Length: 253
Ligand code: G
Ligand code: G
Ligand code: MN
Ligand code: NA
Image 1 (cartoon, rainbow, N blue to C red):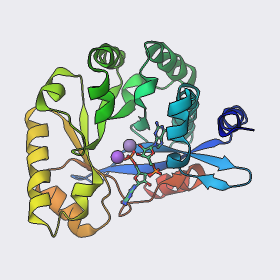
Image 2: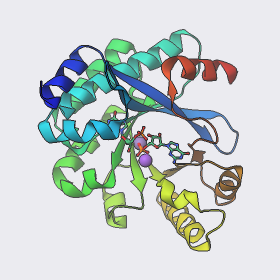
Image 3: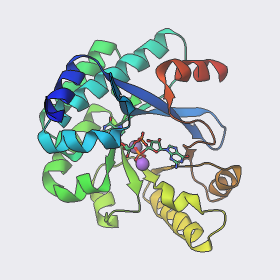
């Protein structure tokens, strides 16, 4: 069996699962949302990270099916947390450029409706490359997602090539500052200056800010002083399996 047909069968067999990482509001420490991160529970190879199969899915076109499976799992989980009385304001789902087809909007609406989840609780994370590769086509789709009520975050911000013009033109709600800038935030003055500039720029055009890869209390404190709104990283929690994520949420109350 080729890897492609193996992945296709894996999606159908329910071997994909999501792990969840909390995103905290820095001001009050409350949960802002959870990011869903896909893994492949491979029967022989064990748990595979997305780097092992997402690029392959993008190359062979399976990313469409994979992406729908991820949205289905993420929104089913959010509905399950609602039923359990566990408060999760928002769920963030990573979306590849190749998933940005016009039908995506109606598919998302259908999945949201089926699970009784309001669209404003869904955040779509896109990398800068998704926006620069396919400008106008992506723009119409992003507008439709926003009209529907979902929010859009730019993932790994700062390592790509998005311009300020792009940010102003596209209906973006949030920037996720790439973890490479956060890593030496507390010790490297240049990285601190870059983060400060990104935050000031983002806030001046009304974008919410999320710092990724926050591992140390010093980084979190520096981000708080610079006015960053949300943090995500090992300091708060690693990506957690659904069961562990539910236990973590229960412990928050
Ligand atoms: O969880 P981990 O650090 O291994 O994630 C690595 C990368 O895989 C991240 O950049 C993340 O954006 C990407 N990724 C995780 N889950 C998904 C997903 O469901 N769809 C897509 N397209 N990418 C994902
Ligand atoms: O590109 P994206 O942001 O979607 O990738 C998220 C990935 O980052 C996850 O796979 C997760 O494992 C990883 N990650 C999350 N928190 C941290 C952290 O604090 N430090 C590092 N090095 N990686 C992290
Ligand atoms: Mn992400
Ligand atoms: Na990221």
